[in-house]
Every structure is written in C-alpha cells, then in structure tokens.
Amino acid sequence: MSVDVLKEGHLLKKNKLGLKWDKRYFVLTKGAKLRYYYDKPQSKSSSTWFKEQFSVKGEYSMLGARVVRLNKEECGQQFGFGIVPKGVLRMITLGCESEKDRTKWMESISELAAVNLTGTIHTKRGTTSILEGFLKKQGGKVKNWKVRYFVLQHHAICYFATKLDAKYLDKITLSGGAKVSKAPLDQLPGSEFPFYVQSLHKDSRRYILSTDSEEGRETWMKAIQQVSDVNIRSTPALESFRRSVATLSVATSPDRKEGWLKKLGGLGIGGGSWQERYFRIDGETKRLNWFKAATDSKVQGFIDLTPSTKVVPDDEGKKKRSFVFSITVEFLH
Image (cartoon, rainbow, N blue to C red; front, side, top):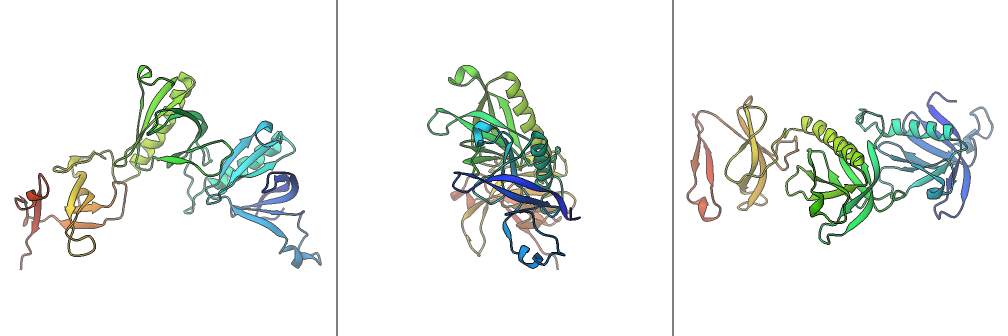
C-alpha cells in the first residue's frame, strides 16, 4: 500500500442506471480522494504503468461527503453503504463482502469527510452526520404530516424525501443558533411526540417535527440544542437575534449592545432607501459596526463613537419611519 493510501480494495458499485453491480477497485487517499479503477492498478515498475495513470474511471472528493449505511432492502446488498460527495446530486452506492469491511470503509471515509477545507474537525465523532433518522414534519402551508429523512450536521438540519436521496428538500440553518422546545400534543393532531425547531436568523420559519417515542424526541432535542449552543458561542452574535426598530438590545457583554435597525442608504447603490442591518456597539474599539446579517463577521460599515458624536431624534425622518434617530459625527480641526 502506498504511503498516500488510507484504504484500498475491491467493492461492488451500482451503475448510474441502477440496473446492475460492477466490481471495481477503489483507492481512498489521505488527500480525501476516492478513486476507482476497472481493476487494481499496476505498480510503477510495470511496463504498463503510464497506461495505468489514465485508467482511473472516476474520482470524488470526500471532503464534506455524506456517508450512509444501507441494508439489503434499501440497496440490494447485505453490506451496502452510500456516499453523497459534496456538490454531487446522486448517491454512489457500494457493496462490501463483510460487515467488518463495510465498517472500515465507512469509518475511513467519514473521518476524511469531517475535515473541512481549513483542516479542522467540525464534529465530535469525526463524521459529517451527528444524528439522522426518519421524523414526521408538518407542512408550512398545508398542515399535513409527511415522513422525511433528517440529517443533523454541525451547521444545519437537512431533510430528504427518502434515505437514498442525494439532494435534500430543504434545511434548517443552525449556524447562528436555534430555539428548540416541546410542542403541545393536544394542538397538533396527527403527531405523536412533537417539538419545535426555529433558527435564530431573522424571519426564520418555525418547524414542527415529531418522533415516535419520548426517548427519540429527547435525543433529537438535546442533539440540536448542543449544536446550537456551540454555534452561538462561535459566532459574533452571542444571544440576541431579536428584531428592533428603535432600540438596540443588550447582548451578553455589558460593553456590547446589538440588534436590528433600519438604516437610510447613502449616495451609492440603494441610496435613499431603507435597508435593514444588524448593528453592534463595540465598547473596545468605540465603534458602531453594522453587518448584513447577525451571524456575519465581516463589517459592512462603521461609525466612530467619539465624545463629539451626537445622537438626536430625527423629526424629518419620522415622515417615513417611526422612532427615527440620527447620528452625527463632528470632525474637530
């Protein structure tokens, strides 16, 4: 085995039409590449080595890939598993000779998949999937219940029509945190153990999900809350994601006040129109910074808060908006 190779060997691969299984030789590299050949490549000392360099039949990056264990009813193989590479809209379905071999392949790929482009592990267990399984979801407009396959990741909860789907139907963003709580059973006919999930991003929809047991509900709620807590601690907006038109809400630090405000545009693109921005007062730099979103780290603009800065009600602005104030900075010569 080459020093660059983590694992290699023959696997069964279902073809694109899903009609038959082909035996192929797979090589997983430390660079997170999964390549497959018709058969095992020859060594470099072989006279056919140069030809073999062009015998790669497929190559996929495993960074951010989703790895799924499949049973015989789902894929036709007793020891099957699926891989959905990031950006690929289909599942690559593979089969192994034994449970031990399947586990080894899945663990090796999952460890690489959990390494993002900056080289950091973003999940505790070394996989891109923290928790997954079937849940009921109530529709947004039509209040019926549908069974969907949910996958909890470090940044979002993605849900699919089926376990085998490569493209998710939608996702609940968790990058800025989320609110999780139990839902009243008596108000949700058709559910069993319902709970709410709502992203802390502005204008986020409140999702209503349901498990088939109290234990399942507790497991999902705890896992989502843990991911949310980690993301809140690692984003600039610590805990205040509430809308505010007239006042700035207080975050966890007494030196930092933040919240949503509407800002009248300048002379550039969008000048003269009201734009909603997330404002944050930084007590250390003595600046009022604003961002396009609460979870952004890149400052879109700022105002230096000096002793000469004036904050006054803007009577002219009240013609367009309620509770308007202006900030004026006087430059001292």
